Image 1: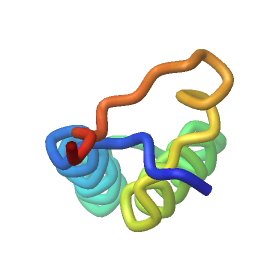
Image 2: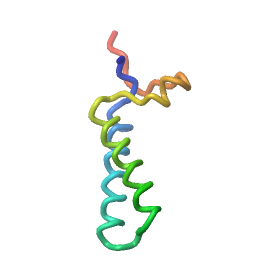
Image 3: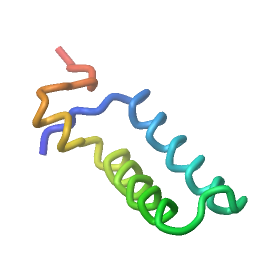
Image 4: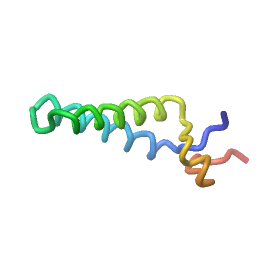
Length: 68
């Protein structure tokens, strides 16, 4: 897999995943919505660590800076 996510993109995804976790911990989100958000947070964390987003690959988007 070729990297297609830049540093800022990765940080934003990690922050969103953290916010989702905090919302659940505070009891703001519950039930089925919490499970859906956990899946989204898990995908965000995974894609942040591997620097590859399959959706970006399908769309043709690349936020990773290319070294020349």
